[in-house]
Image (cartoon, rainbow, N blue to C red; front, side, top):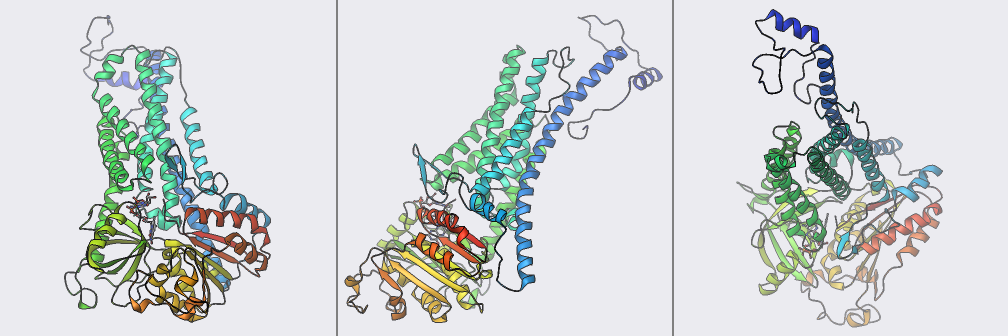
Length: 617
Ligand SMILES: Cc1cc2nc3c(=O)[nH]c(=O)nc-3n(C[C@H](O)[C@H](O)[C@H](O)COP(=O)(O)OP(=O)(O)OC[C@H]3O[C@@H](n4cnc5c(N)ncnc54)[C@H](O)[C@@H]3O)c2cc1C
């Protein structure tokens, strides 16, 4: 205890007395209300013990806050590690089997998957944008919600229980009510401070728990948001109860004058702005990010001023350390990928550049990095465009390039922010235009779809970038798997952009490819025999990307796939385990989630797993 809250020496009354009398101290015994003692005061043994006990209670009540805050952190780390251990065990088990047959789970595990692992908090809305009063809300999955609920419940229990030693005639606080108010204010403030490092770590790109847990960044984000809400609630209770304490104590005037009061007010205000900015995150992501970062930094500095005389400052230092580590690693990563002092890749380039062109409603970027690059499924990179907004970086999923001179390709749907600005700039320049860019990454985990007896890869629109690398990987693997690759897109241009990898996938004969071009009808571009009658409709002028017959043969025009029906029939006919992987619009991914839950029991002999490569956090 004494180590956490300063130094409290456990020395008995008798020993103190012996010490003082054996040393040349004169003990004051005849104190009056007005006199100022100039020598140690002799108090009775009863008083000494009472005072000592009250001080021990006072400090212990604060120390409990530190332990409880640390337990909450351990709880979150424990959940992450549990997930990591479970994933590692599955991998080792799979390797030891040496086969892809993942047995059907027990009835209990099936129920767990159906009602806990796969659904979202309320029904199936998880990836879809859900707006209430203009604020976009993201619902976590039910599994994430359980972990979050456990955290919130523990937080409330810890903040409201286990206050001990509260009594009237207290030496420090006098009245029982006052003492309790003080303890609650201290506890909620201390618990909140202790949460700062884990709260920050969960939002960082280089969060080491990402690798240990196997959780996606969006799962960490879900926890980050919930932990921050509990943190802020705790801070508000801390401030409110402190006001009550000083009002009750009749010393509110001196409270308002204290430095720690104003630093505390600034910290709460800044945290409030940082958290509140999240309400327009989906509309102005980059504005949100700048406000969030600036105000969190300001709040942390204010927090240091607020608690500098009280202890607990180590928690804020650790928070800064995590953050600084992340920035340093990001900086090193950017330097390593994008700058070559000597030859660069193939003796050609010394810094990263992107050859960009607009194709329909998408921008295609062929990226060249000095560093050798191999695209892996599940990865994403952040792109900085120096000549636009150098401080903005946007995540995109790389796909392999058609041309070995390029490191990889990015296909980005034109949205309303940076991508729109870039598209306008490109429209004014000669196509393709070359820009200096910087790449950060790669981040992201590969889902182990190859372990399953069959896999269904479903992409919607620009979500093809999240799915295509899996189809490519499976098409090159010598495994006995029935692989289906379904992609629905609005325009044929999108198909042309990836015609080369599509062709290779189809040529392997290992992947069944079905493409749906929903907003173009075949007769416009092709005659009944799917022979090309016009090339004018396409804005994608590169003749090398004309579609071969094999690809054309796999396209259905003017229609969308019936994904629920597809899942249902696959589950009914399945003879072993199935992996479903999807990336695309929120509605599509949520309907897949729902259908998997509905039909889970239909799979007779194997395990079902759902992997989502989400484009929203
Ligand atoms: C892991 C991941 C991989 C992605 N891969 C691709 C891809 O391969 N192809 C593709 O077209 N899109 C991809 N996206 C989506 C892409 O990042 C956004 O569409 C893009 O950043 C929008 O930029 P904007 O400024 O034009 O968008 P805005 O019109 O400002 O916003 C559109 C949407 O994108 C989100 N968004 C904006 N900026 C960011 C950001 N910096 N980080 C996260 N989300 C942001 C907004 O919250 C909003 O929901 C991916 C997203 C993620 C999270």
